[in-house]
Length: 421
Image (cartoon, rainbow, N blue to C red; front, side):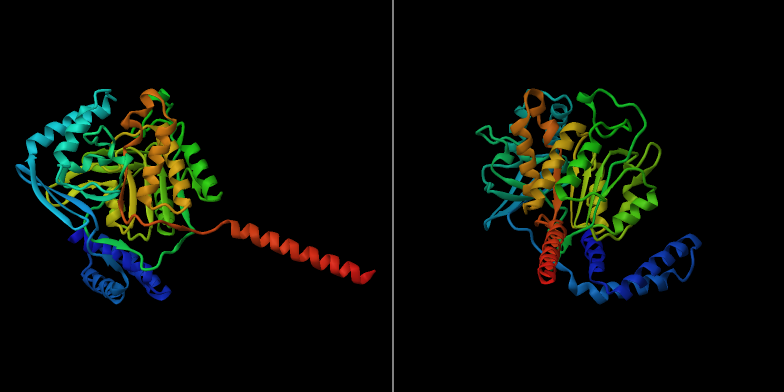
């Protein structure tokens, strides 16, 4: 509930007038200074900030209940499921938390070891999706506790099929998902691919959670910018303050670099020695339509009962981001780059965010051979939040204007020349 309220409030900022937006930023800066000084005036500043949000609170539309969802409750000793799919409601006790912990351990071993023995995928399907649950073409998952570490797309049904083959899967932190009343055009995209100086390790084992030089993140952002027809959205070496400023002014933030979790704190490595923490992100007030965290473990963090996993992905959600794509383990550099290229191609043609990611994974599998087809390489990324499609600004309009202008000038030139003869 607190997370919903915070996100709802932060998304009101998109409706601020220029004057109120300027005043809000002044108050935020003042609040930072007062925090440092421990001033008694801090309460007055908070009161004025809250009044600004109340002024616009009715402008934010809330989708109060997710349609066609499966929700889990991870109790002290028992795991429960509640689903509402096409008006068929199911409430059921699934089993003990000990049973699930044992299965989760086996699943992590399967992923980390890239094992060919995949019976754990059938076992998890049977445990988490009992036969009473109706499986349709699009389902939202609301996980609880360590269930959030499972990408449901790779669970195998009794026919031996991955769930991703027949269903679009997305995830929610809660039923209250903040959506825009009117979809804005996506015209400001910030793509960050930090450069790291440590020598790269063997490509086959290269992941994005060490701080070694990455071989494929530059290719990734080159492919994305080319797909979107943008040349000025790529950045490599920025300071922390420069990164935050650019995130503030963007519609999409794409991070292609290293990330990890240390001392229960999620971190994005912005260079060899500096990081951006989940705490720093969650304190921001962002107006992002999408944050794509193409790095390792951006969906992992410390888990507290009743509060969920404090991951980097969740931090962006708390900051007001409407949707995010993040990872559940130390993803492979090369396969991540390939999937992200396809992701933006699919978003560009109007796919919903969850379907765009699903199609990207299936497209990867169409071309992968041997060990590269193991779920470790393609199933680590998942979609959270509002899954609606994005409306990209048409960069071809500028080319069309140039062509039309040239044609008009040519006609004028010919007309004037004829009159002069």
